[in-house]
Amino acid sequence: MNCIRVLCIGNKDNQRAVRDHKGIQYLITFLSSDSDMLKAVSSATIAEVARDNKDVQNAMAMEGAIPPLVALFQGKQLCVQVKGAMAVESLASHNPSIQRAFLEKSLSKYLLKLLKAFQIDVKEQGAVALWALAGQTLKQQKYMAEQIGYNFIINMLLSPSAKMQYVGGEAVIALSKDSRMHQNQICEGNGISPLVRLLRISKIAEGILLSVIRAVGSICIAP
Image 1: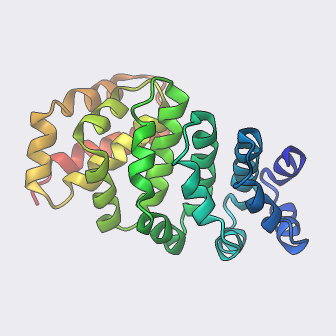
Image 2: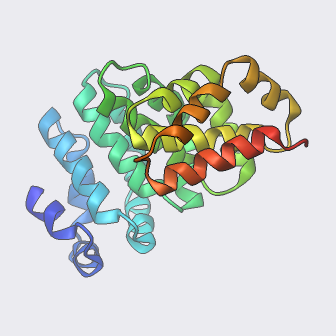
């Protein structure tokens, strides 16, 4: 599985080959293994086989990947859940039907628990998986930002993780757009100062800087 994972990183031909040679069903079978190692490795492999490839994402869903992935989060092993969150992020990215399927199974409540973890990489993977489920529509993003909540969003903005800073900024935008109530609550919850702090950082990535600028603007524009 590790070999397949590496071969599929950024390689759409190899991703399709795994699908065409009927490899997907075996990867999904290992999600229900008694071995935590096999669960983790199959999740990480599914993530790379499906990444940025809508045809393969849909093939994974058709083969039944979603229920056993959700089941991973009902276990106790954090390392398995982190790899499972990688697979969720990859499958749900820019794929509304798969986003809906995960949301219908209440996966967000399990991913929110990862944000409470001590390890930064666990929090980070939880955040990016949640935001993959948020999709591209304002309604769905607003719903997900409300699920995450003000405290976690502000903690993301204060995090040293660039990915968490980005998700925090995008969540602020989703909440505050067309909502005076959310704008006011972000201000009252001390959400402005971490945004301004990020503006001051000289080596911040351009994508995060743009997100932060848009977040500040969305808080200030009257609905």
